[in-house]
Amino acid sequence: MCSISVSVFKSENLYAEGDAAGHVFVVKSGLCFSFRYDEDGRRQIIDLAFPGDFAGLEALTQRRFVSSVSALTQAELVAYPVDDFTRQCYAEPALSRALVECIAKEHAILTKRLMGVAHSPASQRIAHFLLEVRSRALASSKLHPVSESARNRALITANGDFNLKLPQAIIADTLGLSIVHVSRTLSKLKEDGLIEDSSAGLRYRNLDGLKELALWEGVSPWLEAG
Image (cartoon, rainbow, N blue to C red; front, top):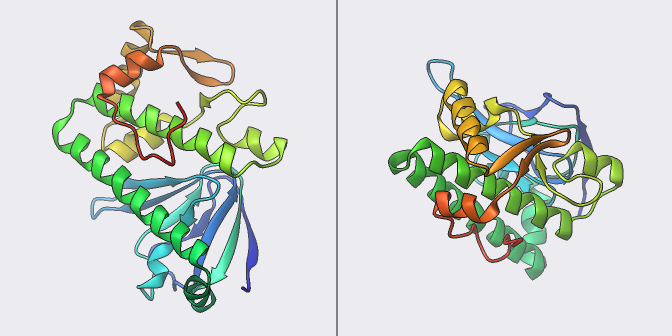
């Protein structure tokens, strides 16, 4: 299958909403996120893309991308022409299964997040998001190991521990909260001994406490990292 290697710098767009959708992408290293702007110019982040995740799957059914994708860290991706990718899915059951699992995973994550936005207080939504990111990052690092330099640009520290390095604006725009609200909630979680600041980022002190607050049911069997 024909493919193209793509490098994207931090804060650079891989593609923008409305661009011709000619490729499907797979993240090799780094971290990306998909987003749209509403009519008032407010950004809504749809999802994060970790190493091993697909990006731009709408290209399989749409002629133009319906969202934008940007790099949160320097990222390396592989781009597959849509026609080649589709033919390969028919030819390789393993690729078809990976695609179905990716779609099912995204559906589960977005369903839980949507229910949280509609019915859960900010503290519960943020706690759930923190656990979701941790599970996805740790699972990605095990399934798709990358070089030490690429690892350190993402979310996993050199010794394999997890520390959150996401800007508060990313959390806010994902959960539909203001940055002020996110900052206050994170401060409360620190006061309660659930998380703490460290030189490597936000460290999770009490996973059981976070899971209790989040009413954590997990993300999906293939993403659970303990």
